[in-house]
Length: 197
Image: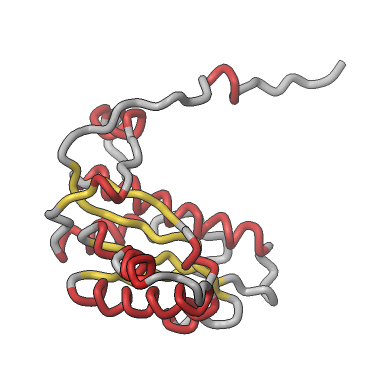
């Protein structure tokens, strides 16, 4: 089923993967065919019980502008004192990247599979989106920001009672590779379990 040899280039890309901030993203974004490939990879995550406890809402082209109007209205409802410039800034959030995907966590509370495992599966779908976008040749950032927690935005997205935004994945191109940042070393986060005496 799997190749006998490891795919060293892919492993190296994972080791070197960096988030590129949306303010540094450029056109072009993935084509429809590339997005289909990226989203197909996103659903190949651990899914105990075969529940598919996630779904995706994609924003592309003019849909980013139209949803920006929703964001502007919701921001103004939250902050009535906001200036026109501030509202316009919020309305332009989805224009920062060529493609935006909302990953929706949809847990089934009545099911025997623990809610925690269903939630982790949605997080894994977000991570697969990031990794797949990178392997296809693009950059991506996983964000929540205020609109991931806004009831007006939830209504505009058509979320059900047991659904919530796990994250917005922004996908595009970058002019240059971002510099490395400080990270935990493997020695700091890895240990071998030893049976107690």
